[in-house]
Image (tube, rainbow, N blue to C red; front, side):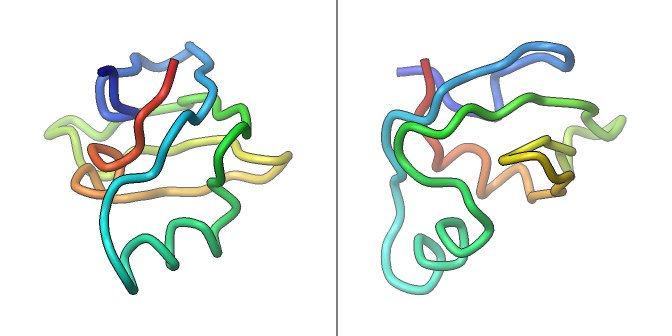
Length: 73
């Protein structure tokens, strides 16, 4: 299983599954990260948190903890 946190800047990945429960999962989905969507990692902060993404044509920053809950291929 590869997570979004493991994707290096400049690479793209397709979301396969969202792990997590309740409000955390809902918040991730509300940001546009849903099953089947393509995500491009733009930058990762020096300490690995936050991660800047391009999702559905807009830029988004998420916490490393949230990125670790997103399974990708």
